[in-house]
Length: 139
Image 1 (cartoon, helix red, strand yellow):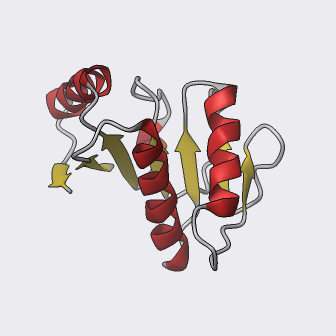
Image 2 (image 1 turned 30 degrees about the vertical axis):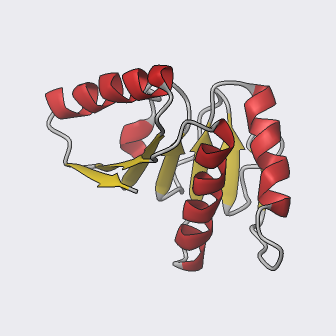
């Protein structure tokens, strides 16, 4: 069964969520995992794609947009279905992706923004009501 981890950030800045997603992606990649990062729109996906090139001076994450290439270790998507070969789903969208159960783990990143926090609560209830193992990490 898919393990779901909620990471609760103390600030409301949207960039903090994206930076945390980059750091989480980097850690998972260093452990040999393939990662699918899911966002709500193409614009958000392109912004994250750009951030992954620059978020840390001396790091490199082999990544790209899922619409262009799903063979790379880190795919950034905004609506397309991922393949079966990914280990971790990092969800930055406001909805539970319909394909989440294909993954060993799901990371939900929530911050202090009222709207994002409320959508996070709704996703938490969704997973809890269906019996998925949940863990919350307050950062």
